[in-house]
Length: 285
Image (cartoon, rainbow, N blue to C red; front, side, top):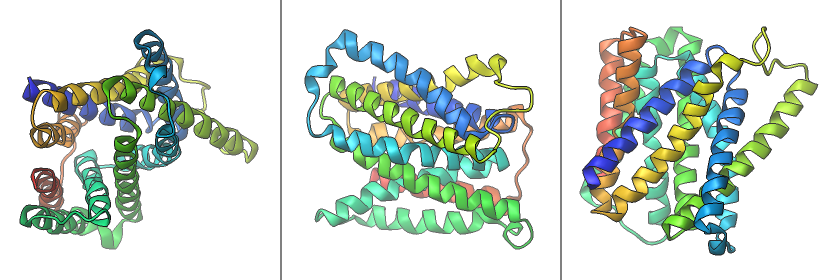
């Protein structure tokens, strides 16, 4: 059961990343984040009401609120990076954010094993190689790499904060709900500020109503992935669940290869693969 739900997590996260990156090619990233997260917040709100999760409220929810501030920044950077592409490079690089929870553990007195040290080294090498020769001649690719690394750090920070925000399944739903409410609030303020500066917040044709189902899927897939990961972690070793759940970039890369026909240079593919291997080593360490 652990393997089943963890692999479901990879599938859901991978498809959500692919959908978010694809939508950002037509709609500003901030709008994609706000709308998709608003839909997720509504669904989570219903779950919180019906599960009685409000009884889990406490000071720990400040961690969820902090995650809600960091989350939109990470998502916007990640979706922009996915839109710049190639997704097959960007998505695996996003997984190096797992180094943040490892760093928190070090600060709290934990010491990494040999496997974790190897994972950090392999992931850093992957980041360097994933830029490939394009780092010297294509500003867009430099921007994509930078945005991805910012997003990875943000995701890792969110994971660390959410881990402190709940200890039970119902508490996790409440923490995720609070996080997404703050996501939408912060994103909404950013949208308002952007419109005041005459920055485009919608495509030329107006709000993309035809994309609403896809936006809903992105937000709900992210929520469902969190739920399946919790189930996986509760039914077996967390290390097994984490390793299998961290395979989601493979789903994004395969979707980009199959649907968008993306082709990677050999050095980029090698770098992306090393970043993913480094992440797996960190998780198993």
